[in-house]
Image (cartoon, chains in turn green, yellow, cyan, brown):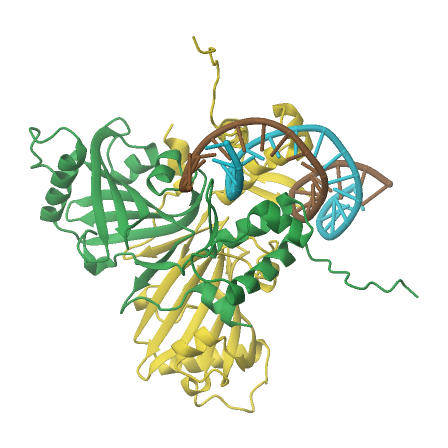
Length: 255
Length: 255
DNA sequence: CAGTGGTCTAGACCACGTT
DNA sequence: ACGTGGTCTAGACCACTGA
């Protein structure tokens, strides 16, 4: 009757390509190894470069590959487990593997949504602390911490008016105020231009946006918006330490 | 001297396009409204369809748009805050807004990485419970829960051999065993074909993969791998309730 | 400078949902 | 059947990195 459809894949080429590449990555490549360039790979698989790129983009999204303009495509190391502080940990910035570096501090009016949560008026100036989180020598997250003046009442106005020094002063005062709890949410986003620069990525790169509300005795003491590199990070929330397996590994070992 | 470069944007077209569209979305469109089709929009902005699509893809990734083949592109509602159980909550499945529906239960050998965490040998059969999480009538997550036989010793072998009924039996037995703690990690992934189907998305759609390890008195009682729709979900981890603002709103209101 | 990935074009055809 | 978004092509040029 009907025509014999041999190989009627009914599966997009880029999807099949991704599978093939993924398996090749497991068997034939070591972490850090450089892949052939895109034109070469596309020719080798007999597809247009755009199609090949679609497969590479997915693999990069899953943390399997790392691509850098002018350099090439390399096999990415497994994702880094990054501990996100639990309620007990207090203000991030303590542990050895949880190194937040204050970069700058300015004062500005907070975005309306932030102002509402902080319970300050929309046109009130708040401290905005810029911090970078570094793990294994790599910048993995960039944060904006919004601190109303009322949360750091003893902050001397004579201190450095901006810069890392003032950022440290604000953090010190926050520590002194103590902490009663936190609220946290995680969602997918794309990196703003400034965050992308700090994270050594292109604007629009996928990031995990962690929004944290810090409660002190008087109410909401501060709100933090931290953007983590989604390609390289696995956020961990542990009662008793980080999980040792990654989703990628599960996939790869599921064969 | 040099040529006067008026409008030397040095900013990709699709990026600028995304900004323009984003603003238009805020001012001229209501949630659920249908946008003009891609060919029309591309023509209107004077760009190729592929370029227009690049902008739409980003906006969809950020949860601003929803695109469905054969239907069109619509303005997405704000992301749903989905509570991820904290240590106190025990086995997910209780609360009103945390409805996990058992779908099926089979027995199979777990992927190697899972088997290692469960502390069972790689060729040992475990129960695999399939659950779907529904919020506001929408499927937001699909889960595979791996349960070694030793965690549900009293599970009658005479029970339904598979299907939703058996899934419920396994969950009931797990409840009986109690829970001492959990470990959790969140990372970005792309939907497998089966998960995509449950979530009404195309394979490869971006998802937040939540891997949870459940501890009982005897050790690791089960491991869960849940994939949440990244476009529509905002995962919340609260000491005291969910955050009420979303990243998108922050962005939009930051103007 | 050469080589890489990033952007962009102007088409074509396909799979799907609705009518 | 029609219109939608999804896939795919075969080019072109640009921006960046490193030798």
